[in-house]
Image (cartoon, rainbow, N blue to C red; front, side, top):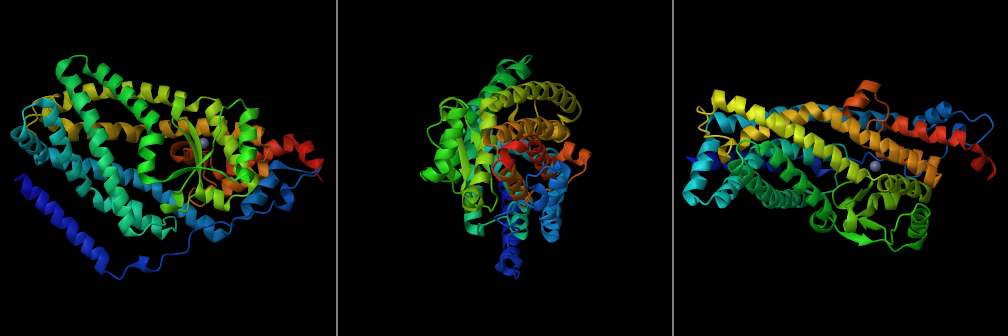
Length: 445
Ligand SMILES: [Zn+2]
């Protein structure tokens, strides 16, 4: 029966692929990238003068963005709001399908025929589950990750390498997901009453471990990381690091252009694996002032211990999520457990139900997570302005990331959907900083 399920889904995907390749593709001619101008001039109203006004300067910066670019990045970003909903609903349908058609129970039975040794049994189930669900959600994955990105000129990959990255992600999911699922079922089976507390502890330790090893062992699976050598770029950054008490000796760059046109930078890992990386799109298109402003922001994350605070926040949320799981699973299994042929919380067939409940939790928590991240990003913005003293470089960076983020949302929209302050708010913060530090710029003139 299960092989028939696989056959049917695989066949469906094959037809889907044929349709993609045979149709005269709109992607034969990739649309022009939605690129803002690389160098953004400091508009007259944003130049230091005794009449400098932060709001007028902000408006002058925003007025530099061509209207068609704004419309396009607004459409891209607002489409993302709907995708949160569609991803959630599609995932819920897949989970309910696996439960109601008892495919999950059948996968468990098959895994039991392979082995009764619990840890291996769990892994065999996980392998089937992940492959089957990846196939079922593939239409949405390919639309969201490939066609839509190309439509908005943000993607640089052709289908083959994109699919290669998907396969790598699947491999990572099989290994890391397999380990965590094995550990969690071990906990549930041994501690039937308190599993939700210990399950949360295992999850927290595991995700912290992944955060630690990620920059060194996982990210390089997808991109090449190299030490940056150009002293023109590196020296001002390292000088800024020294001035802020950051023991950095190197700055890294990575070939983000392999996948996308997005300009960005990040600070990742912690302890020995902590590193600041600026991607090659930023390096190629950003002005020195812009790069310094962005690096100042990243250093803010480091100095204010945002990674540790993030881990703490995620830990609290994880405990809350496991408590919800404890009650949610008990409630759902009492009602439908028999129908779905799930024997209990310790039965691997319960996985789609767990995924469904976790996705409901994450969906509801979207604004909370976004607000937590956005608050840290705002703090890093303030730190970056103070340390780089490049408000115009910062405004230019805000416009560049506006290639894929809406610049000027309403306040509620920003609260719900934005994990960074909006472009307008970031430029305004930079211009406000400039207004309060005008003497730094007046003396240069
Ligand atoms: Zn940041």
